[in-house]
Image 1 (spheres, rainbow, N blue to C red):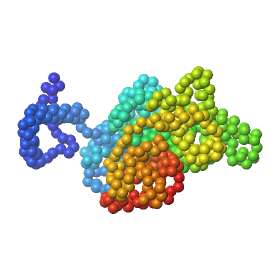
Image 2 (image 1 turned 45 degrees about the vertical axis):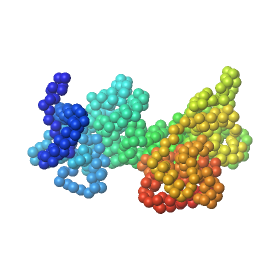
Image 3 (image 1 turned 90 degrees about the horizontal axis):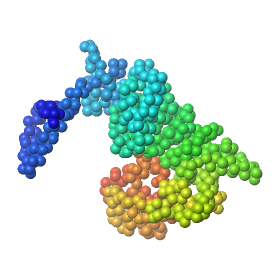
Image 4 (image 1 turned 30 degrees about the horizontal axis):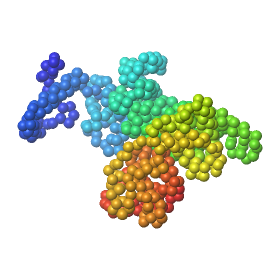
Length: 599
């Protein structure tokens, strides 16, 4: 009540985009008409007016307590309002200056023109290119010794990311080097992960000005190729941005960090490269430069020699999800399982003793994987396909799946477990340590091996029947509610216009197909079913619609292996078609390409 009385005399004054006195007169009549119309329906008009007045009073009080807006530090060069510049230059200024509108103010001398933010963008336009490394370093007042103390204290006492940010802010958040900023981001992201922050909490976190400042400091260093951002810090910054922002934000910042990381890959530790690959894959951010650099590193003699099983499985998932071919990664993985031995040279010896020793080494290394990491690695090699599914490492992973499946059967018999087939109920399927997602990954690997002629044709050991049954049961027990988009309905209407009879949200071999044409004889020239997939943005890299994600590629490949022709209709292409004739022509060209494709 006292707060309401204290704010009673507050006056609203818009800081940005406020109305002029001339426009007030024109809008006054409209406002009165609207108010009278609302009052005619009851007290709604008066209630809205009181709520709006109170909100304006609180906004005025907030601006009064905050004080005057800050200005940028003196050594930094920024554009004056009188300098127009071109749009490309303006875009560079904006991207280089994110998160610096919170810096403390400074006095402006009488003979110096005051520099202000550009109207409308709300960002300081900082000329990072014109700022020397020495001048920039003068901004960093926190020493490494101070940082170690602060990091230890915050890591031990903060339970949430907000508490960690408060601890860093009390220690001097605004004047830290890029390396320290990356370290702070890592701690904040770790706290968000350990506290299981939900989507809303992460959304608030990435909008926090303190987080924006830390990200901006790292991005500014990465953009200029500064040595102030070490390889470990670049990897940590990318990992933290991916965890905090996810797929929804900070794509421009991730692109700058990825470009810098591609140069620093060779100087990173195994865990840092795994974190970098995970960061890009988890937020669907394609970076051919990074994955090419990783591929080249793994193809070298060192390869994956010092990598832990967790790092190996993370890399396998990242390469499959987003990284492309990964030939160098598969070569390095072969050497990892063989203990550094060249598998091709051993095969040329045609020695049974050498083969047995090699198999024993591979089995020993495969046993170090956790069940979940083992399934993820098998799935990753399956998605990569081609030579990856015929590689020595895939045989080692497959053999370990078979061995653990037999152990589960043996334990089940000893315990007289009637549910040893792995099916616990209609919606939850488990088999030993594997459940749901991991059994689905194993099932997709089994389907791919069957498409190559089965285990015998591929030189693989047979998996236990119980594991195969559990994986198939988990696959068929999936419950995914159908989601029909506007684009899918539009494609369906064009198919009807073309005279193609189709089914919506059909289930084919456990996959849900958007539009299924059971008999496409008139379209393909042969009696072959066609699966029409209307693939939205979530099926592709967020920054490159030409890069399909691993799950999408595997689905299309396995449907082709099962005898379906697959027509993918990317929304990014479909939305540019205006007339029905253009859409019909697009689908006809797609049908021709699908008919020519091989399973």
